[in-house]
Image 1 (cartoon, rainbow, N blue to C red):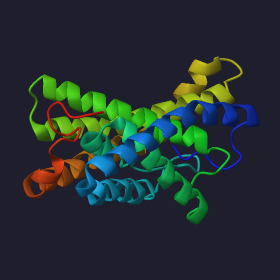
Image 2: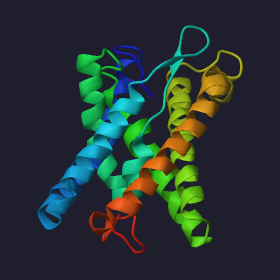
Image 3: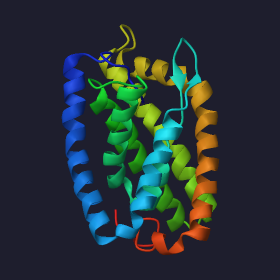
Image 4: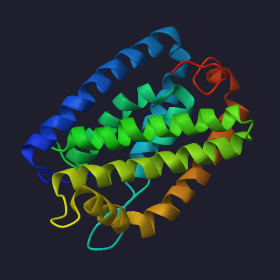
Length: 223
């Protein structure tokens, strides 16, 4: 999801920024309300952002000089709902662009949409869907984290395909090629991320039950 600085055409970069901005504004309002109404969750909120920062900064070399990495946004989406992750993910991506040269500022809107918006919403939908089907907590968390990770990369593949369609097969062919570049490394990485998120959520469920009450993690929690 970390499209490099200057890689997208200016119009594409501006369009993704315009699409992502409303989600980030709503997310900021949601986070502000959450901290005002439930100040005891501040540490957990910060930990969710730190989890995303650390995991998404771990790069694994892929093919053709590219790299893959976990996203870490599934945890926050499970605990607080997907809307919160738009702001947290944006903060993570800004720090990574400035401190690690991971991603970029001109491509920030596109990276935010794939990692901080699309991924968390898919993760949250998977978690809620699995829980509605009475799946065990561990299975629900695993599916949420893994599918949220894969969704991020599929969206990124689509973003790149829109910017650089294949001369012969067009958008569909380019999207398949971009997705295939990351498939060999991203599939196992998402599985590992899912397992790690299960461990973290189980620990929180065991030792931080009071802080979890009323969050999106709880039945009927807010989005």
